[in-house]
Length: 114
Image 1 (cartoon, rainbow, N blue to C red):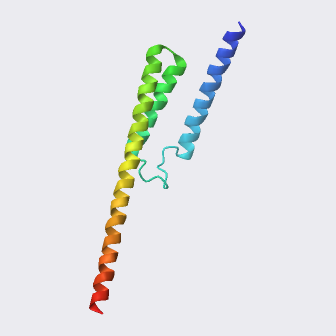
Image 2 (image 1 turned 180 degrees about the vertical axis):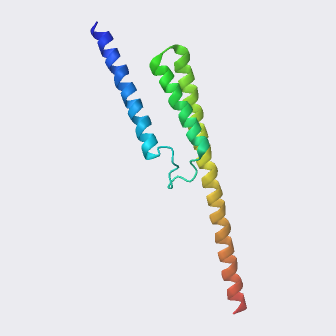
Image 3 (image 1 turned 135 degrees about the horizontal axis):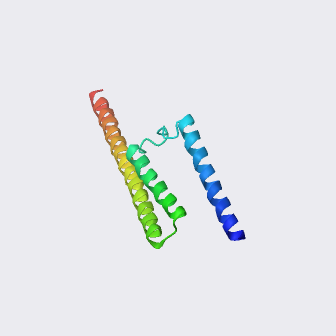
């Protein structure tokens, strides 16, 4: 009897947190992209939503298949976000490298003219 009460309280608490999070997200604009993470795009939000759905499925029914599904979704979400960040940083590095070469070339040309 005590375990049933505890489980019911846990699920009720989880639902309350979920409802609060949904309401606050709607009011506060939860899904706005953060300025300090320009590599975090709409696709990243999508995989995070999938991860959240997988977790909610597992919490409601902690079966072996839901555990496997959750682990797969987590792995894919991490991989997607990591690859997005890696591509963004690579492009920034190449941009910086190109700008540095232009500055050095401009300095050398300017020095030879004088």
